[in-house]
Length: 153
Image 1 (cartoon, helix red, strand yellow):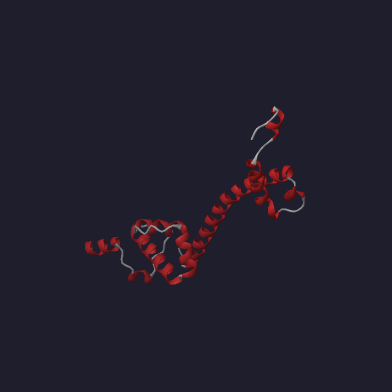
Image 2 (cartoon, rainbow, N blue to C red; image 1 turned 60 degrees about the vertical axis):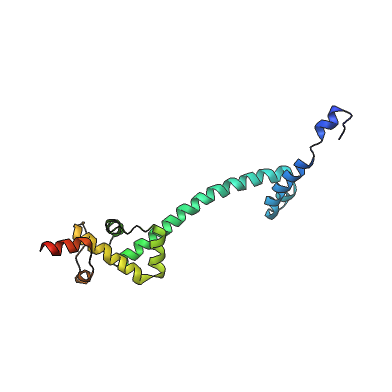
């Protein structure tokens, strides 16, 4: 393209501006009023919306972690063991499940979660963790620590 003056060269922005504006308008398509039609207003609101979206992704992760911990805590209270003793018992038995998996088990697989709480209780009793009462139902659970105690007796 040949320009006769420098002013015409400066004023042409070419196809790049069209695609840049189209991208902004595409993000602003669900906005109301001039926030979706007027580029100078839309670009400000789109940048603001993208900043909130970034913060929202961080908050979603935090909210989900809190939800999982609440579900696991509720499952532990249902089976008479504290959350800290439950986690410590599982770690000492080399059962390394994350909060999300434990929360899903507590919600959808209550018998499996009960088995995990029994294993954690047994290990906590064997290792002498504070705040764990020895139940008669724990005699059917066998861990490495309980095997070593039976061998020495």
